[in-house]
Image (tube, rainbow, N blue to C red):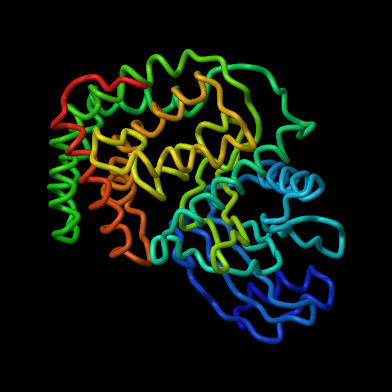
Length: 349
């Protein structure tokens, strides 16, 4: 067993000491975390080592407080940290933060077995979570602009002002797999036209005053666990911040059924409406929140590939499963290029 794992587990009660330990690497994720599955007297547990960049100790404490609040209000699908012998919810060891939680059942296999029932249940679970944490006491529940809309608009502006040229130069200078080189060149070529579609909507949406509360912000299909058609877990909470619920709606629906822009990029608009109907049966969205979700989804389509290209070409980040990244980039490129061919401002309806 890894010595660091042994050292971390020494901070927990005896029934959390591992009888067996299986290293899962990143477990298919891209956050930079490492995961171990443990078999202990307490049951199957998940040990997570967070990446050095994030979250900070105060941020992780806040995330754990939100998760505990959700559980106290009836939402039991988030991993709940096990406390150490001195009452902490994580361990600081070897320059990293570590957390231990029960192993949640299920598989992140929506795209292997997609169905309307699974889509409905995922969106219902998201709405239940949002309802459970909307009363979290440590958040100023004011109306205000979506940080995500503002951030996406700024990122588009910076790319058009020179960062896209930087990415293009890095693409030519850095050795990368040929598939990434091809996707990168096509993404950079399509970006300016696609940005002209997304930017005006984000400009409008960034001015909306909408409800703010804890949101996952990176909830996508591979973070939702299913047992049969039932959702049995939502994992990887590291991106949680105060935001509009529209951010999570756009992120999860976009990852499950494609972009909200429907006919703009050839996705199934009926499936999007199915997912929205399930979500809004528990947590209604007003007109501003619907418009915001539309704009955020367009921003995700335009920006997702540039973030991956920066990580790979400029920051030099390493990932375990480059084939999975290529697949995500290829899927995103199809929507981006269709959006770029449209070349005119989208309209929220």
